[in-house]
Structure formats: structure tokens, C-alpha cells
Length: 242
Ligand SMILES: [Ca+2]
Ligand SMILES: [Ca+2]
Image (cartoon, rainbow, N blue to C red):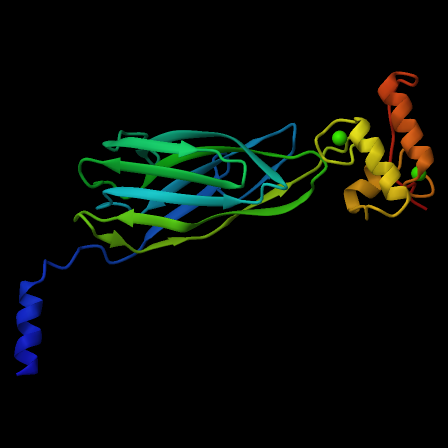
């Protein structure tokens, strides 16, 4: 009896979907195809977001996260073309925005499901913030959803994070990481000298303008002289290596 009921329910359900493998969402360096990129403040890079095994996808809502303390996203450019050939996909809607909190939201949809296996979705231009070296991930997650060919159907997806390595350009005197030497930085040097601020690895270099005895009043004075134009010429910083 139970078996008969189960059989009847199976018979009433819609045909099994052809998709057997999850949609693979990838973020790779558009220049090298690798899942890692190195950027500096002077040399931004472009990450390409693509979906493989994407035939039968009717729409996508993607949430992408990155470490905004190291990395800045300056542009998101819609592509919506077939990987490699650049042929139109038929997808007609694309939205994105670049909030400052390290999140990008992308929506894409077509009037018909995709018929191609691989689609390039957007290019994401990333750059490094000044004085912030390190490694950051850019990953897909949150409320990301891949819509299948039937209304209301969602498809499984897999997404590996990509790595962004930020190489610094040292700006001597820049304590707050905005790429400039200002009064704010001088104040930060003074606060550091009295222990109100514990300098990080970069501030230890950028704030030591006389290159001795850590960060102190002498460094703040050099910074101030530079700001008011009393001293000019190249500015050096950082402890002298023994
Ligand atoms: Ca600064
Ligand atoms: Ca010093």
C-alpha cells in the first residue's frame, strides 16, 4: 500500500531535471585564468566571474564578499557572454552595485534558460588599498541563488574562493592608510608615541620618519614640517635593518 502511494506521488511529480552536476561559479584573474591575483594601489587587476555547467540556468542572484580593509573594488562590468567565444547568451537583465562594506550583488536573468555550458558574468576591477599588504579572499556566498529552468526551482552550485594578494606601496608618514600624509597621521604618530595606538606592521614602518627609536615626537615633527612645506624632497621611513 505504501509503495503504491509513493509510486503514485512519483508519477505526479514533474520530470526529473536533466542537471546532474552543480553549477560551478568561478572567480579567476581575467588575464591568467588563475584563481589568484596580485594587485597594488598602482596596478589594479580584473577578476572574471564565470559560471560553468550553466546550461538550464534561468537566472542568478550572486552575493560576493571581499575584505574591504585590504581591497577596493572600483568597477563591476557586466559581460553575460559565452566563455571563450563571446557570443551573446540571451540574458537580458543585469544589476550590480559596489557598496563600501565589502559586498557586491549581481542579478542576471534571461527570458529563456541558458543553452550554453559556460557564461562569463561580470568583470570585477580590484585594487589594493595603500599600506595594506596581505592576503584577502573574494568569495561567493550569502543569499546566492541559481534559478533553474522551472519557475521556483533552484539549482545546486559550487564556488571556490579566489585569493587576492595585495602588495603595498609604502607611503611614508601615512598612518591611517589613505595614501597621503596629513595632520591626521601626525596626530596618530603622537598617539602612538604615548601608547594610545599600538602600531601595526605597516604603521611601524610608515610612522618612523627619522628611522630610529620607533615612532615618537621626532617623527611627528618631521611629518608636520613636511605638511607645512618646511621640508621637501624624498621622505624615507621605516626602521633601519641591523
Ligand atoms: Ca594618511
Ligand atoms: Ca622614529
